[in-house]
Length: 82
Image (cartoon, rainbow, N blue to C red):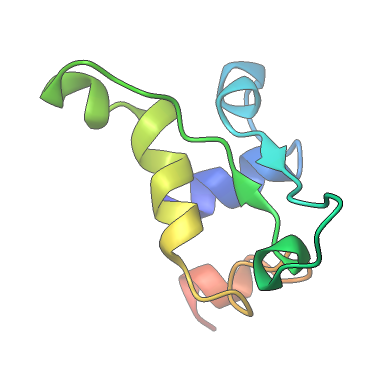
């Protein structure tokens, strides 16, 4: 699933998956540690089934990755191994 999110963030997959994964920048007036990290927007769901959808589970998984692994300079080889 992380590979699908990676491809969605790089516009390398179907448009409906790209629409579900949008990065949110935390740059604001105050300087926080979280301002250096772009995270995905995880939508609120009302059911457990909604929690399992790609639109919710994909961005949540991406946000749970280590910051250096989830950076946009990561290549697909990091996900599938060499």
